Length: 378
Image (tube, rainbow, N blue to C red; front, side):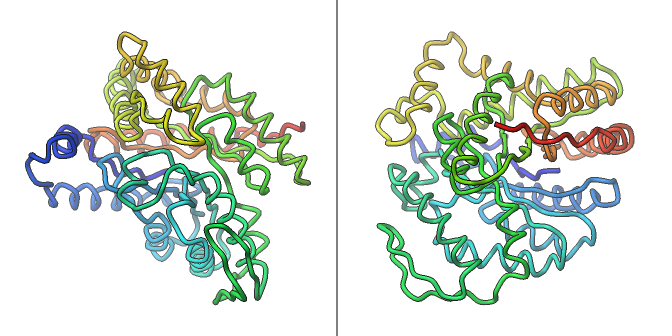
């Protein structure tokens, strides 16, 4: 399961405040209530049979209200005993890399033998870069320096790094990680544009697919990812795949929920990343987003088209239909794991928990029986 903790209902107020400076103030009680509900839901998943809990990093907007994923996961580490944990993702250009290495090390220690899957990314939301005080044009170079420093901090008792953004001399991190090799081997990378896929692969990171286009198009991305890993001396690996999930007793009920809540999730993503804005054309390293934005502006209803894609991509239906889709995706991509967002958009907590309970009872046992296939070789 993946926690997003969205406040979709706040987007209109948020956009009004951002555009005009005139809007009602944020309702802190609504934020607090959403947090409490989602924490309570997540505390049940170990007993329901889920294997791991993941979360994300985002700042300032209602898209997801999780500015520190490792901090949130550390809470759950102390409240559980079996499940593993992961981030999708820590956005490296927004952090000092030594602090990232320290946070990952701390999480590994408190897990006491369970695994921490740290996913990394470059970030793509203009307002987040701006409000955090970073230049989005520098994200690719900052990422490349930061991931090298994180790995050095975990593996070398003392290291130096002659970087443009992070010049470091005689650095020692304490405490030392419990198992640096395992921590680094479990590093993942998520990308938004095809040209970005090899960026993380070249540093030995494993692929994490957060679908933003038709599934068939990811075969090319994953082939490029695998080729870049091979050229850097790393072997074949399986991807991890993120999706939204909605499960109901009948197809009609599932379709009703999917059409409402998955479309709201897609709309929230469009708003957060400003995917139909032309600002990407002026930002270095985001050419794919610029092309995509231009295409969306040409569409009659860009939000509806994006909603159609998300509804097609994600997992929803009756228990049998959900299991069938997971099985087909497993055969097509040989993933290591599926990470499912179970509450998103304006979905009420009781609707989410009913869907999760049904999925846990009637889908998870079959999902655990899906064979773990060998990774595709390049």
